Structure formats: C-alpha cells, structure tokens
Image 1 (tube, one colour):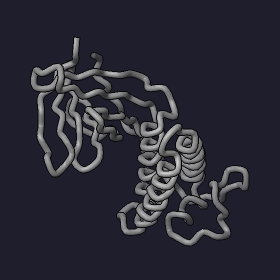
Image 2 (cartoon, helix red, strand yellow):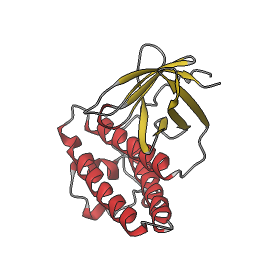
Image 3 (spheres, rainbow, N blue to C red):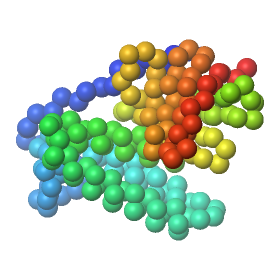
Image 4 (tube, rainbow, N blue to C red):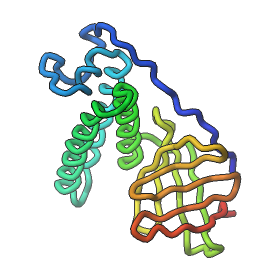
Length: 204
C-alpha cells in the first residue's frame, strides 16, 4: 500500500465584499451569527458554504431513496445538520474564527461524502488486525477538501479526517477512533469507552 502523505490546505481568509452570485447558500441579510457574517464577507468561506449545501442536498436525496428506514435516516440527517450548524456558530470563541469556520465546513463535507457515499472512493484498504483474518478493518479514502476516510468494522461505520502528524497518515474518527498508517502496517483504535488499540497489516 502506498502511504498517503497529504498536506491539509489552509484557506486564506480575508474580509472582502461578496458578489451576489458568489454568496453563500443562505440570505446574508438574515445572517445572525459571527460565523454567518464571516461567510458572507469571505468568498472562500461562501464557496465552502455552497459546497456543503450541495452535499447536504445530495445526502438528503440518498436518505430519502433508501428502501428501508428512509424516514429515520432523513430525520437523523436533519438533526445532525442542525447540530453541526450550532457547532460552527461556536467558532466565535476560537482564536481565529475564520479558520475555525473553514475547518468546520471542510469536516462536514467529509462527513457527508463518506457517510452517504456521494463519491466513489479513491482507494480501499482491507486490514487484518492482531493476526486474525476475522478481525478486519476496511478503510475507504475520499479526496474531499479535507482528505477523509470511511471506517467499516463489522456493522460499525464511521467517518474520519486526516490529521497532521510527524510520520505516516493518521485519520481521526468519532469518539477517539483512529487509524495511524505507516506503510503496510497501522495502529487502529476503537471508539470510547472501549478504546482498544490493535496492530493491523494490509491483507494479502
């Protein structure tokens, strides 16, 4: 397996007037939070807002098209989106609110793409952990704005995003889950409260 060494892009943000056709997905005249004001004033953030809005619409279409559990999936997706907006709006507390808002948009896009398979993965790796073929972790990689991964282990599915590390490639998921890849070997950690770390190798 080829190690994926990716530099997470840093979006330069600066206050600037936004043309109507370059604005975000919402009405800036009704902007209420610091985050929404930043999005309205910053073309790069407005572009991220439009991207996430498009991804959310696509995810809704997938949820509504499910053969079973469509109503539940749609309700859950809408609840998560509301929660994400509330989290984004907390960026006013950050040392660099604009950078915080950019990261929140990138992370949300990654979640939507990987959870609802809105794009084909750029690669897939099957991992055998603790030398037991039955103990398998599958990672699918996606070339989202913030490089991301879909974890599959048994019936568990999660989303992770690339973190900055001194060596290898580490993707952090929910509740402490991560996989830290170094060549054909990796360390995988289950979510809390279990938090068990296992050593994994690329399956032949």
